[in-house]
Image 1 (cartoon, rainbow, N blue to C red):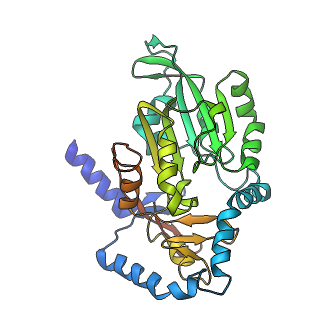
Image 2 (tube, rainbow, N blue to C red):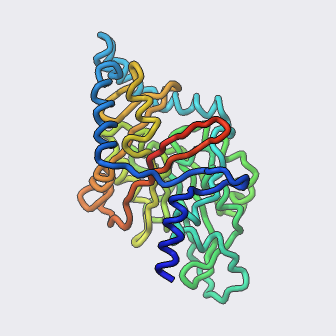
Image 3 (cartoon, rainbow, N blue to C red):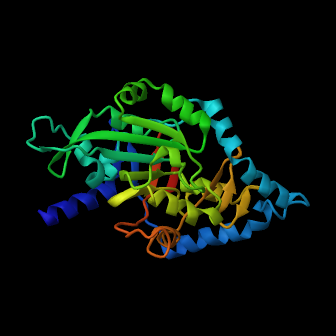
Length: 316
């Protein structure tokens, strides 16, 4: 069985993952040391062109403006796009099966001990709720470790416009009336608002494409505050942009986009950092937020679009 599973994985990597129409959707992307060196060299050669601080006498002022206007820029983003930019994420049980598998399984007929303790999921950087709202569709209870527990969710975001939109969603409204859904504005570079009472209450806290939007010098503090939401034994699940992602290579070769090492401004005024694994180990590990690192790896994929004869190389 082990050999068969290995062969199947190799075949999948060679053939790519198929859409329903049979076209290649994505395949694992093999990054060699030579290729990483080429990417590193490309960014270095374009650094002067790309750097905001050295672009003019006002360069340092512009970098500070991006920091000072971060909240305004995210509010403007959600005012412009409303709930239409990101799709709902229905893949958590596949990406993080240990943490979310029980929530996606029909356990209505399972024998389990009734528990008075909720199973609390907290998303930090939730936007308009594309992760937490699908969890509310799964039902009110789940059997976790032999106990039947009520599912309770928190959605927290820097952008007040995003939180207002989340609170208006009918899925949130219904669950909120039952005391199972909560939302609030939180800048995670600052301590959690005391009135929320969210320290040490979460079984699973989620950081998906959130930390990258924060200035690198504030990330360690933000990681500690995010970790403070976890119960003893709780789990933090994380996914974000990785070093030499296609988007970084575009920003890193464009005029006046570089705010710092691997940190860039997008056209809408929001910002993005591209991580190495060592960054995350330092920020979240024992010398940082004090968490035990259970799993840490890159996802490197090439996405194909046959109709456009194009490929996109993504790194998370």
